[in-house]
Amino acid sequence: MALYLSRLQLARDPSIKAIGALLDPSDLGQRRDAHHRLIWSLFAGDPAASRDFLWRSEGDGRFIILSRRPPVQSPLFDPPEVKTFSPDLQVGDRLAFALRANPTRTEKTGELSNGGRERKRHIDLVMDGLKPLPSGERAKHRMKIAQEVGENWLSVQGSRHGFAPDHVAVGDYSVSVLPGYRGPRKGQPQFGVVEMTGILTVTNPQDFLAALARGFGRAKAFGCGLMLVRRAPRPSG
Image (cartoon, rainbow, N blue to C red):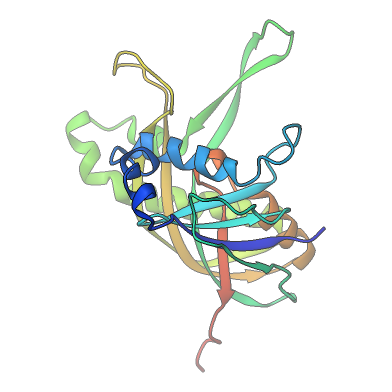
């Protein structure tokens, strides 16, 4: 199935700028929620269709989308730049990547839902790594643990999905309240987002391309999971 890589920019028309605070709020959690709804509007032609796209915000009203359908024209956006995405990859190819991800692990709870299914919980790996530390020490060690989590988590992803990370650099870790939650701060549902860049080597092109289309990790509806790739220079020597 064909894939499309699209670049979009919020329209700079004065009528769109007038509602800029609604389309691109300053609060991080609200912004991810607003962007989630904005991107969905570009694929709303079939109400029965499930989400078949990944997206990420590049800031200042700019977005990148990988999708199985081209986005529709919208007055909220400038005309999109759309091209087919079908890289010709071989075993051993080295790629530079950028990935915004929500690294988690899933645990069984031993409980059943009302529908009879086993309940599971998703553990944020960076939050879990910080948990044993005293609260006053967590900020100091946050990026060190985020770096360790990013490296380990991406290595596991690679072993499952046809690539091997050669170098991983974590540039940021942020936490958002789950969009739509209203309630006390204590116990509020949150998800963490790790910003990673680096170099990887393709070990199974078919598996890797399939994983690129699906995305990596959770929170894909809120701008996580899309891995951007480009050819990396060959190592010297």
